[in-house]
Image 1: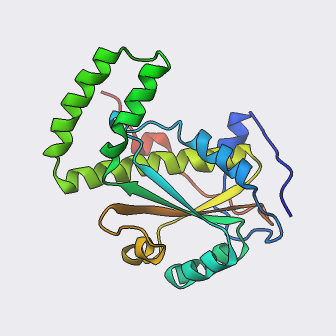
Image 2 (image 1 turned 180 degrees about the vertical axis):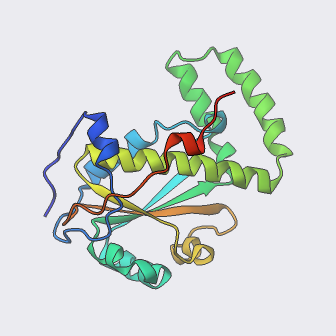
Length: 213
């Protein structure tokens, strides 16, 4: 069944109530319309040079989950019971979309055309000489930013999530017909309707992890 859409704007409840949920109600599905809304809201996250290098693969069909299962065998409960598993990738060719991004900004009156042209000329030179490892580090950071935002957006929509790093990263892209050398896996994220409240966990006090100068 498709879940009834639930929205909350209580930010404190969203952040304090978030848990890593591993088991979901398998009868609850998320419509493509609502998943599109969730992803759209998640992509309001910041990214380096606004290149938005994140790419999402929503794995929800039985066939797709069967493809994923052996690659995430230590997280089989999430794969089996979630409404979807979202694979988040970083696109190393993210500059390919620069014209779309900056051109749309001009169309919407958010940026003068001459600023766009100057920016794209500068960025074209930057990306032409950008070392692959620097590019990879950048898209991983940006991918982590959008992943965290996605987890909070999911909570606002009445769902829970579990960020997963334990999977066959070197096989994921190819398994779903994506270019392995272009798409860098950031993480897997399960999403669905939790069947329990999960477990609270301890956080280090700020006086142990922060200092003021």
